[in-house]
Length: 262
Image (cartoon, rainbow, N blue to C red; front, side, top):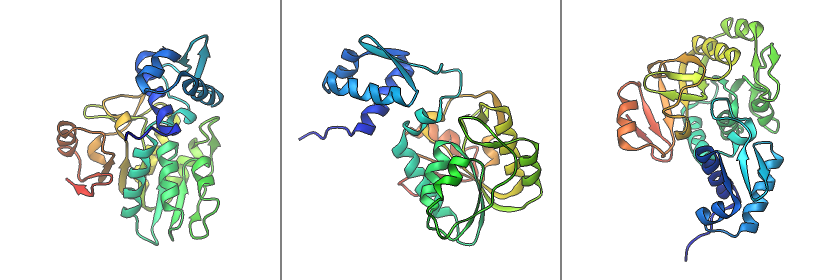
């Protein structure tokens, strides 16, 4: 007996279709996902409420063009299972007592959830990530100064960069908007990229946590080449050819749920 996809899985598939096609009708989505059109309509209504798409009579289209950074609400629904798997591997690399810079974004939030019960000190680069530790009784938070980017709630600006330059951390968990063999890790926002580069300089060890939806793409601003990361943690969505190519330019490669190292 076949297992029906969960609501989250359906909505991720809907977003994947819309990213690739730009738009689709309810009937088309129903056929692709093998579910009733009423179910598709409910999913589209829920996704519209988050601001990631716009419904029109009989269908829907994404609001954000592919050439710009998707909103956090969309990214949290994209490959969420893969990001949780990546987060579990990243958490296994962190030792109790360490000081950690933790990036923002949907992957950073997933890593925060995996670290919630650990005895570590975390410098979150996003108010969203800081709030993810709200219930933790073991994680000590160091919040840097700086301005807050509207919507994303990332910390940025000269004060944030100077704070990072004045400290020495054990680890930096780097997330990125995109990454490729030629362009390395890249980011949409100029100020966010500057904070990430300062974090790389401030940390003894850099762990890059990136999923398959980011690969083979390039965002607006360079962060660093792939070779700069001491460890790269990926999900299972890569084929062997891609893994071999990434492995050739990185110090260590880990695949979520596989514990394989390159």
